[in-house]
Image 1: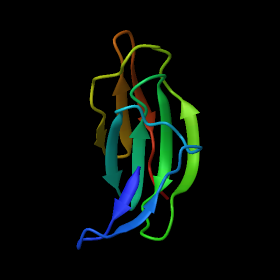
Image 2: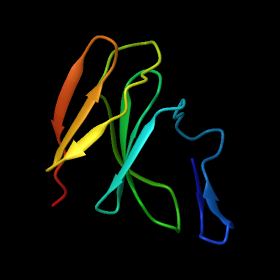
Image 3: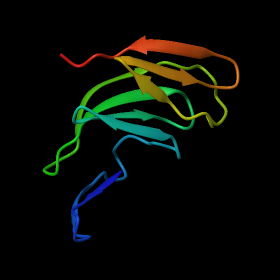
Length: 95
């Protein structure tokens, strides 16, 4: 994951020791980034900031070991995630 400013200058970058996102999906809402790994089903909640990568929480929400192709959906504090076997609705309202 990399953060750029509007002029194209890189502000920060996750190094090789950081989390793997594996071509997953991202939704940004209420200054938060919801990132679902494309392999393994790890959901990360990341603070959207230009100063640094700040992971607030992470947890495995899907068990599929294969690629997760379905995009996430977010509405009224509910995040819908799915893989080839399972669909889940998570309450993620920001307080």
